[in-house]
Amino acid sequence: MDRYETLADALEGEVLTEMAGAFFGARKAVEDLIEDFQLSVEELRSRKAKVFARVFFLRFLVLGAEGEAALFAALGLPPQFPDASAQSGSRAWRPAGAPFALFASTRYAKLVHLAYSELHHACGAYMNGELEDDPARAGRKRMSLNYRLLESQCARLNERIDKLNADMQPSTVLQYARGITSAEQPGQGAITNTLGADSLDKGLMFPRMDFAALKIWKAPDLPEPARCEKALHAFSAAFYRKNTARLKRLMAELDD
Image 1 (cartoon, rainbow, N blue to C red):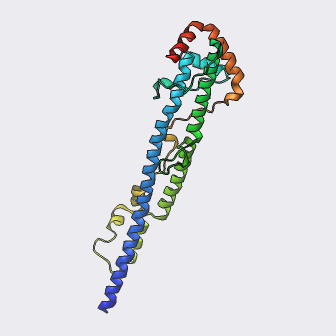
Image 2: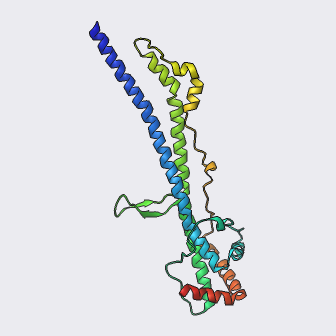
């Protein structure tokens, strides 16, 4: 009989060990997913600096926030970056190659169109991603982290959290472990008895991620440059006539 009792105790110990491993393993997996998600949030926050580097260049070309508002008004839009002054981004950023034109007014119009196109692309990449080099695989490309991807990641994480909270309630696991033991042990079930199952479960439940509460900046959906080329040209021509001397000095500064 002792032999059978020893075997039963061994099996019981193995089952309890596997249960504990599954329970804590599942919780650790969710904790890792939460940490990965939080790192992605911080990475996306840093990526908006690329957008605002383009905002600042466009604002430089149109002589400040007032000119920027006038440009977007010419496109039938309200100001798109009202909080730009509080954002980080390189104010020294310039496009790789400035356009050439025989007339200063034409060159200015090309610069404005280029700056707007760069900004439109940066907003699209921030929101929907773009192909970039994969640092983990030489010669391969991957989709860059973006707002929509992070939004989907949050939804999948919440599904995982909901499933864990529903399928592995701590009180249920403890009661099940208690039920398979061969003999009542002193203090067994003390946690659930003292706190109550509901309190225990609520205390150890993973909270869902509130995406809206993270207040992640959302880039505006700007119209395609080809759709507003005429409006951009008309704005640039009128703005250049009004500010010729200042804009000539500005373009000379770009050539330095």
